[in-house]
Length: 594
Image (tube, rainbow, N blue to C red; front, side):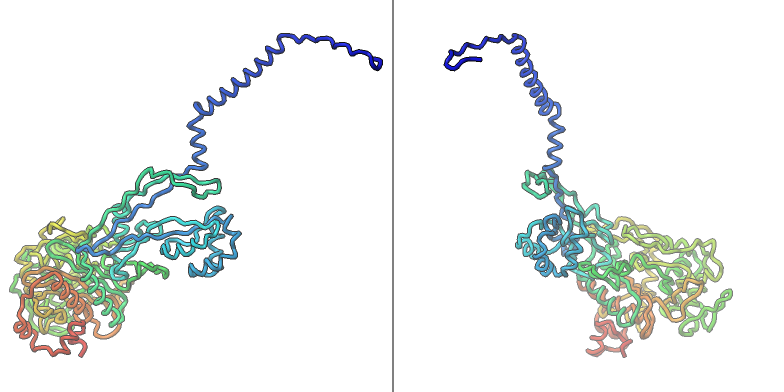
């Protein structure tokens, strides 16, 4: 033990082995090499993978919605367009903590607090829609509250300025801007455009931080210009709606077409719906009845029976028929006329709509010839418009026609047609026997896309002359006459089939098909009102006035000059009309109002 005050002795020096220092430096060098190697792998070898993983967490590709193309009428007036709207969404993890402000938000949205809560809880844990496609002003009022967890993004919403006037024809889009009915569906590829893409950053909660740029700009959809004239469409719809309501009918449809080009100027259906507010979902109202509803047409088929018989020589233009009977029996059926006549020529068979006369003509005609005439005129097949839900109707093969079917086909029973088919077929009579394929697209060149001769021009000329008598005084279609213009056409009143091989006793379809001016036809129109329950339920009373009002408006709208002087027209009508009669005539009442 060292004594106090004794001097300290130096410690002995310990020499470390030289290899330990070398080993330490080797360890340090190896650590640095490992770090450098890992940095190399991270930045070079695995760099793209790690950057993509980082981008997946923070870099996002946001869709840029494409502006859907507008739908215009033939004059450039808007029928459908897309307007900017905003959609509000919430992050429930943040928004749930702000329940004190929910009542205020619900009040601005116009919903109850319970509805608001249902929307929030009905989404996912990080995303829930609060309100889809609302007006920017309303969205701004809600966003101005600066509620944490509440966000918005821009969208487009379809708007239809004409409302219900052309709704079954145009159809509509769903909330994502995809066409699901009518022309919106048929031309969806043309209208919808291509969505773009922009790149941005979001934080770990998914909140947008910054937009870095547009990777691919959105391509707007193309404009669709229709042959429809919005003014004529409005007149057709209102006249049709008036007839359906006045006669308390089930439904109605009307088609007005250019006989030379096949352009459809109006296609109306009633009842309709408001495409801007589809809160009351009724699929039956979306039906475009002008192309989707088929029915047995009745007497409007008689001109084609006569045309087939004339073409094959079964009858001659001056042939006459004895119809002076209360019952013309064919097989087990009794064919009757509404009014008993004596001997009728072909013009009178049409003017007085004689079922007996038409049946006798058909029984002289080989069934294959009548069948071919109907098929050539477009019956029993779709028109080529491409509208969803278009029906082709039915024309049974002639080999299965017995003698009763041959007689019934003459006056429009035993087959089914659509209003569009009737308009196009009568267009062939108006167009010198040339059938023109209908189109809903504006035809700037005024040349039809497809046409074919379905009857000789001489036959078509005779039919035009004879059909003019139908709208004269004493004819079944006199309520279709238009002051100042010659009008040709045909009425039809057919009893509805009950689906069990028989007919309903008191349910009918009423029809009028005609064209004007008869001397130089420009437009053809078919009107069908189904199931009227009030008043005189005949095609000449229910459907003919719709034709008169709409066709008159179309002739004036398109600048077609009158071809009959007032004096000649009044003389043909039998007597001048009073001011009150003229007003009722213009409103669609005609003599039936007296």
